[in-house]
Amino acid sequence: MAKLYNNDMKKLLFTMFVALLMVGCGEDTKKPVGDSPESNQTSAETPPAKTDSSAEGKAFAIADLSMEMLWVKPGTFEMGFSDKTRHTVTLTQGFHLGKHEVTQSQWGKVMGSNPSRFKGVSRPVEAVSWHSVTSFCDKLTASERAAGRLPAGMTYQLPTEAQWEYACRGGTKTTFSFGDELTAKDANYAYDGFGTGLQRTSDVGEYPANGWGFHDMHGNVWEWCADWYGDYPAGAARDPVGPADGSNRVLRGGS
Image (tube, rainbow, N blue to C red):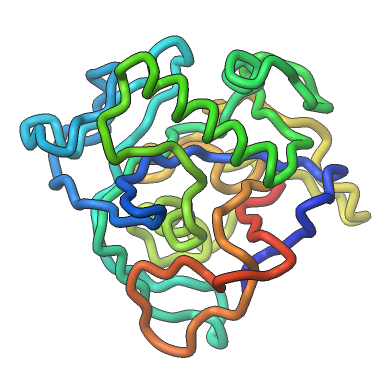
């Protein structure tokens, strides 16, 4: 079952990964853009245009923010972490996803503020609501479009829960992307037997990346997804986006 919290809860440490998706008519109509062997080599400062097949599937960096976006190819995986929720999911469209959690420096440049409890320009922004992170995505989309760096039909937004887990697993089938057990060398988490949990956030990228190059998808802070909270489908699913409405949004990752 997905993790959930009410939209108004700000006491825990929430942050985000930004996804770049193809959109049309207000709904995701994401187009697959190939499977390049150099797809995780950041080599450009603008997203590949939909019509530029030579650039499709490559990583890029968002100008002025030093925000690296890695390509995630379409595919099928087993989603969920128990026998009751595990089900086959196929993502028919590829997408770009941030290599790291959004940092306080990046948030400040877009939003002009820093609500984080654990200050540090390279630490993830936290203590942000779901509505504030979607506002960040909207403002980033608008500024990149105004600068002429965002091809038509593309937008920055939160990943769906399925996209998040697919990228987090990085092609693995184990409980964590690093295996069936997580150690203090793999992620920033703390448990001393008394449930005190995380002591501090860490700089993004301080811990090892998973097999697809993404950092801190285990540990550090909770990460918002686009979906409303709800039960997973009983059988196989294609491009799931969660319930049509609800009262809570999905969180993944965790500290």
